[in-house]
Image (cartoon, rainbow, N blue to C red):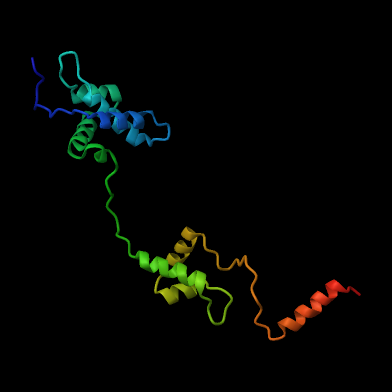
Length: 176
């Protein structure tokens, strides 16, 4: 006797899909949510002694989730195959800063210097780029930029710099 309810579409895995799902199931670094989805799909693909695919309720009992969860991931897999097991994009606010704006902030930070200062501040760069100070700060943090911490030798703008260097070097070469 057949099972009650609507007839489910058969979930048949190709050899490639079975190999990929098997690797994902055995991977120790797999996110737990994805590992659960893989176990659901593999259990749904199993055939019982009568040659029928397992019901959502028996898979749910085995895996420890609700039948709705099994139905959701079974349907997603049937529609999108392996790509359907990943997370879908979540709703949220769209980005307001373009990649070009980020690249311009990074370029300006690395290649230019303000007129009356030794380095840019987040506020001066924000005013120059037309962004908020917080946005510039996030960009600098993301790229590891710290313009206030110069790690390279900078030449002095002092007009008597060369004379002072001669005096200091002279002291090292011929101490009093």
